[in-house]
Image (cartoon, rainbow, N blue to C red; front, side):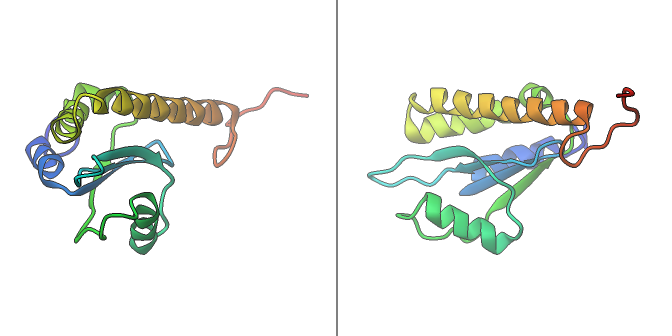
Length: 146
């Protein structure tokens, strides 16, 4: 383990070897889904997806998103325990994901990945605002008298 709360060598290896990777962020309900599989007609895939209630649901959603591919033997899940997406980027893991996407799908994967990262940042911002305002599953410790 290091400063990021996980074995970075193991996380790097998982990213480099996974067919399908799901990154769970401690502070977000959404997940990062990366499907590194390619074919003659389709490149790799990256998206922000809803949390699945089970592994079976994740496989079904993957089949809907990538219908031309068979189900993978396994889906690798990586839990990012830090609360900030910026720490995920600073750790270098984001760059490893993007580099692998580019190596498999070409330079056009870079802007797609950046758009997904912006979506994750928006999700993080919504979560922070909900926590401050007491929305969703959050409750304020104090409220201004009405």
